[in-house]
Image (cartoon, rainbow, N blue to C red; front, side, top):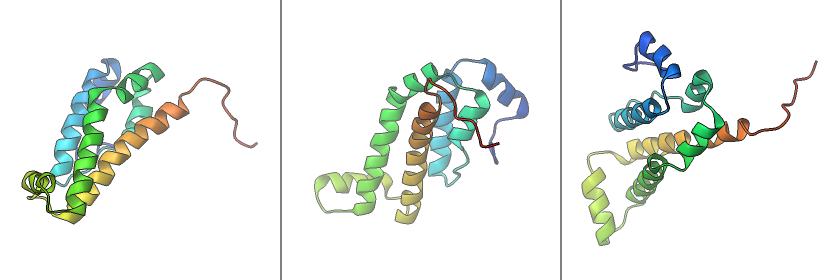
Length: 134
């Protein structure tokens, strides 16, 4: 879950006790690492490990962080698609240092973070849990 991350075991245990703000900070660092080519956060597994509450994940999905991630995904998608208008020139200037195959990987990684949060929210909905077959 923390493959090659800078989080030590002591910090990992304290993440469970603190509020959800540390998760936002960790996500920002994970996004920075993604642009360096290190996609190490498995967000769904982390949410399960942390035993995140449904209210926390609901608030996260409506936060500005998720909106920034989705806008970054859209920008990366437009950068990969390319074009010659003014918007695409600005995107080439912003993301030109990233090769397009790497941009596709980053886009998929950022999409996966949001999808993991939605999946966790769906799994944490109230109601009866289905039992596995005996």
